Amino acid sequence: MSLFITSLNSGSNGNCYYIGNDTEAVLVDAGISCREIERRMKRLGLLMGKIKAVFVSHEHSDHIKGLPVLVKKYQLPVYITPLTMRSGRLNFEESLLKNFIAHEPVSIGGLLVTAFPKFHDASDPYSFIVSGNNICIGVFTDIGAPCIHLKKYFQKCNAAFLEANYDEEMLEKGGYPIYLKNRIRGGKGHLSNNQALELFIIHKPDFMSHLLLSHLSKNNNSPELVKELFNAHAENVKIIVASRYEETEVFRISLNKSVKEIPVYHTVAKSSLQLSLAFT
Ligand SMILES: [Zn+2]
Ligand SMILES: [Zn+2]
Image 1 (cartoon, helix red, strand yellow):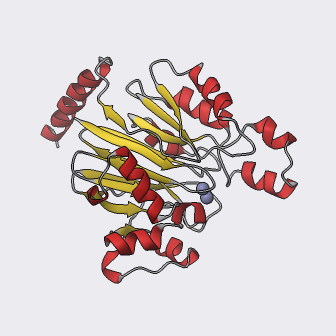
Image 2 (cartoon, rainbow, N blue to C red):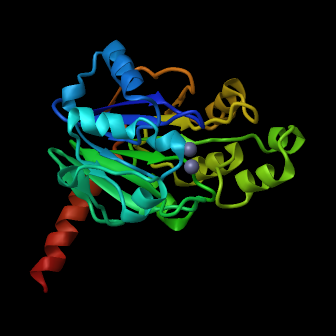
């Protein structure tokens, strides 16, 4: 039992993440054109018809640029909050418009999508986890600071797209104006390599198999540098850098059989749950 994931594009020029099972999939964000989504999906052998819904994290253009055409052309339900709709000046057919509420899972066929709030300079920003087939995938980008929710949800993930936006020294020494530097690192902008690494080292579950470093800055980061940084602490986790120019391959995420704790944990959790129910 597996889920299949890919980043169709990742970075300040556009974000679009695919998570699916054998028959259904969701997209998180559509920040590249519909045509480019189609082209990249085709190259990967993924069918547009599998996409059953699109979830929108926030209204920045690198997350919504392709949304109007995609939603209209494929008549896709779009899960978006009213504040994000308004701030993004978006408009969709009433029948396709869906809301979501933080921490309340939305069921899309065999997939469950759960949103949770994050620190970012947008009107109503969220991160998501998508689960199905006993696998959980996180989509964690555009995060000013790691909050308790992020830490909690990261611990559930078999694989995650995790923002590693900038190298602190490159940002400091680079040519960005000071207001922009402060926007990026000021707690409601983006996650630095070191912040992402700390989250990974401290909160990575034993069963995590893939980490896709995402939303890398073009000017304040380097794919080689960040990969090397994470590889030094990766243990059994495969580290991938999601590109700002092309799609990644499709990764099949399955239960990590080498981790003995999983079945033991489930047995204990189930029997203690039954025990507590029996006494209520
Ligand atoms: Zn972004
Ligand atoms: Zn953003």
